[in-house]
Image (cartoon, rainbow, N blue to C red; front, side):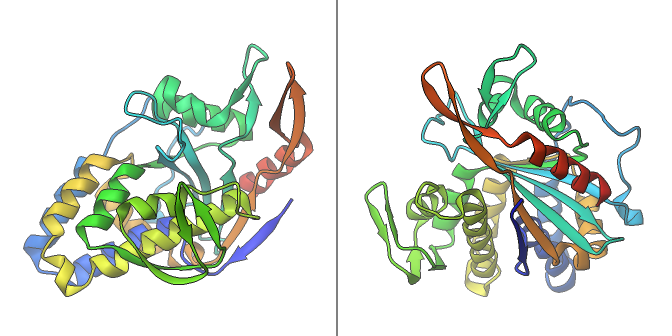
Amino acid sequence: MKIFIEKKKTILVSVLCVLLLITGGFVYSLYQEIKESVEKTYKEVDSKKVRALSPDVSQKESFNLLILGIGLNELSNNEHKYADSINLLSVSPEKKQTIELSIPSYLNIKTQDGENENIASFYSKGGTALEINTIQDFLDCPIDYYIEIDMAGVEQVVDIIGGIEINNHIEFTYQGTHFPIGKQQLNGEDTMKYIKMLAQDPHKEIGRAKREREVITGILDKGLSFKTLAKYKDILEVVSKHMKTNLSFNELYDIQVNYKIAANNVKQIQVQTKNEEVDGKVIQVPEQNEIAKLSEMLKNN
């Protein structure tokens, strides 16, 4: 089991840190507009409830949050979208830590009828609820909340704010665009390419997750500048259309206030896979003994 200690913000922290800035530094009317836009993203899902009661984030109870990035895979289109970025966060204020588990989008798992199925494809078949149920069964642990981000929205926001700066650590070329090592400016289209690349990253899903966080942080840094705030209505419109969550605005605010220490002490783990030949094709399947260890780690957090 590979564990990476990560001191930088998780995607969750990057997204939520803006809430404190909103209430502390912006005028009330802007706060209200942001609150209304966030409330538009609220959507319950009919997934299996493993816990009798959901954790109370106002009381600093531990919780598990699934973050889905939709539409990263080249197979994704307007009719069939895949959950290609799958990260499960187990947040524990008592232990003052967050476990961030990256689940490879290329992972194949056994279905109830014994067939091998790509874990990212369940979203295209049954939406968020089926993806949540699948991961709950796979890891034998509850998922209390979810945040779903359609990555097309990320591309639009980057273009609205006039691009972002990133600091690339791996030289690669993807879909005709070369990304050298070092700082560089990206537009929306190139930002998506920067996030999508997986095969050339030695750290695979963990590496891509870091690039996702870097992009989100870059958006927030640029988005909170005085010049960009003039475009906040356009940004809010995109966010309200391309993000879904079953966390209310008040719950998001409580998480920002109550979970700072845990959210900034992150253990990154990736589900380990192995090659297996099925019907003449080589697929990636989980190391079963590792899954039991991961499940126990999540339950004990």
